[in-house]
Each structure stands twice: as C-alpha cells, then as structure tokens.
Image (cartoon, rainbow, N blue to C red):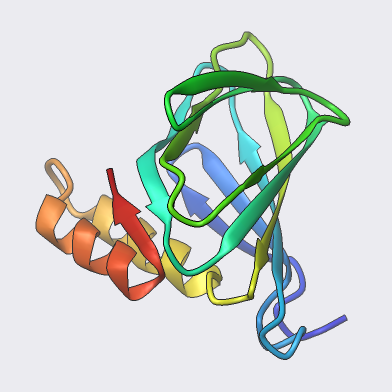
Length: 143
C-alpha cells in the first residue's frame, strides 16, 4: 500500500477515507470511500472539470442529481460522472451510506478535502469566494 492509504478526513459528520492517492498511482487515479451519515446533504451542485468520477455504492442508498436527473445509488449500483456534468448528492434515508469514488486522472485528492475542512471550521457561514477558489485549484467548479 502507498503512503496515502487510508488517509481519513472529516467534513463535519461526513468521512472520507483515501485508499489510493495520485502519488500511489503515478497520477492515473485516486480512490476513496465516502461515509455519509443519515439525512446528510453531502455535496452542493458542482462539476468536475479536470477528471471523471465513477461512484460505486457500497452500503445504504444515496440520492444523486446529475445534470438535473435524480438517481438512487445503492449497493452494487454505479454511475460515471463525466467532466462538466453538474452533480451533487445527499443521503435522504434513515441509514448511513458508504460510497466508493474513483477519479481519473488522479488530480483530485486529500488536499482538497483537508483545505475544505479548514474553511468549514471557521466560525460562521463558509466564505463562498474562498470555497470557489479552492474548488478551481482542484479541478472543480461550483454550479
């Protein structure tokens, strides 16, 4: 296993466990598990501008909205989100959700989540300008 194996980052009640980082794959992929607790809105609408992201359901059911279309992802379900597709997700259920996310190429990694956690830790509402700048540095755009 590479040095980034099981690098855990907390975003409020949500948890991200990195399995493969870009350094581990020579930049070809990043892979992480995402734990989304009951009744959580996990990701505001955004697009991935520098990578594709494949989501695979491991536990529970998560509601994804991709380009305005809603889709439930449960255990064994998957979806590939192409570059530029606006998407977000939330856990609307009474159970926890675990997803596997695979990003190719591996330009999106733990640094984004660490920086986002720091922005969210500041008292008061998040600074939308700072969040937007962070997203752009890591290949994302707010919708």
